[in-house]
Amino acid sequence: MTALRTLALLSLIAGFSSSQTSDCSYYSLLDHLNLIASNSALQIVRPAKNWTTATLVQLDMFLLGILDVDEKSQTITNHIWLYTSWTNEFLTWNSSEFCGIKKISVPRSMLWIPDVRINEDVSDTGSIQDSPLVILNSSGWMYTSARQRLTYTCRLDLMMFPFDTQYCNITFSPMSSEEDAIHLGTFNSDKVLSKISEEAMVTMGEWDLKRLIIFDEPTARSTLKYMVIVERKPLLYIINFIMPLFFFLVLDLASFFINEARGEKLSFKVTLLLSISVLLLILQDMLPSTEKNLPMMAMYCVGVFTLVGISVLEAMLITFLIDFDGFCGEKAQSSVSVHEDIQLEVSDLTGIEEEKDLLKSGEPGKLLQCYLPDNRHLLKLILEEVRAVRKEAERRDKDKKRGCCRRLAEITDRVFFVLYLIVSALFLVFMCLSWIQKLI
Ligand SMILES: *[C@@H]1O[C@H](CO)[C@@H](O)[C@H](O)[C@H]1NC(C)=O
Image (cartoon, rainbow, N blue to C red; front, side, top):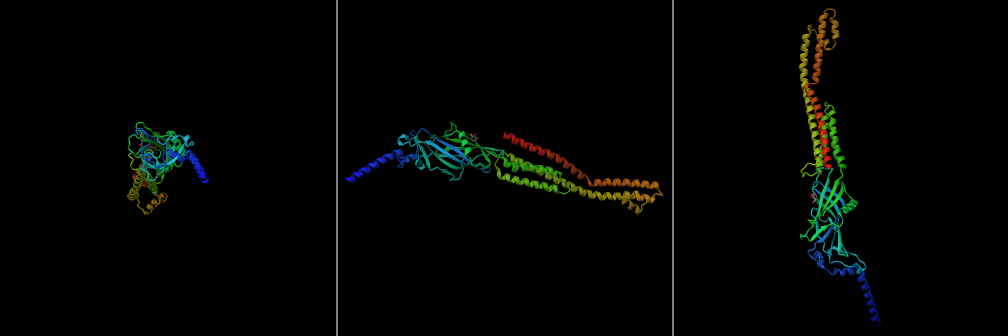
């Protein structure tokens, strides 16, 4: 008897407790939803009661970081967080029947998940980390999240580099080709998404997220296009590229004031040319060679390089002219001295050696003293003749130093400097204007 009573009591307790758990546990809810036994139908087919109604899948993408922009391979790497939500028409319940349970999480393997891919995606496999759970709402609305290191292709427009803004598309579309079975949209508006992204953004590198725009075209409901607008922060490039190149140009202009004679000018200019070619090399590492239009930055670099290159050539020409002139000068000097001697001999009527010595030693006064008593008039004449000869000799001496080639070199240098200054100024103004014009 006692045993029977105990059994009855136990069964009563068990029944009571079981009735309690069936009301307020997730288990009973799962039972109600028919998810406990493996219900493979829920995993394999799209959960629509009428097959003709499309399932609306909402894809909300948040940008958490701009990790890399590769100009060479034309790819951008972002850290994104993706919320995918849709409605399962079979999994609904009345929350008041289940102690007010409104949400339940279910392993994603148990349910049908929309297969949406990104068309531009070129990420490595394993860069996606899906949440293992799907959160189910009592109305049948469910969502799951995923974080991804997304690398996607984008045609980068580098014309304005480093003042460029890039407009890149991320297009979502269903993998399965079932026509119009899945419609894509977003839960939040693009304003909300960009605001949250801007606030949550941790790493941006040299880029600034300007906006996220959603293209939700009614004609193509099965694709969803996000446009990511990012702007480069140009300061580092201004300091690293634009300013040094400008200073190199200024230094090259200043080098026109270095004295030609010491031969330092040419080596200085060549050093400048080398420095610019280093910058060109660095630039070549960054910018792709596939561009149809030459980026402004490359034009600027090549322009400065060409200008300095031409000025090196000009410095070479000047050096050559001066050297050539020195050679001519030596020849001219020897011929003139012979001529001078002859002239001196002709004018020197007496032909006395001492006289010559005195004349050469440049003291005609003494000569005058020697002959003063006898032939005053003659001596005066001789003295005048000697003076004239000397003047002539001095003039020729000067000419020898500044031969015609040298004068040509000086004129060329001056004209070139003026032209160079004008061309450089025009070039800089042109670059500035076109940069500013394209920015506006
Ligand atoms: C991105 O999509 C928009 C809208 O369809 C289009 O106008 C634009 O050219 C696309 N941009 C790129 C880089 O493909």
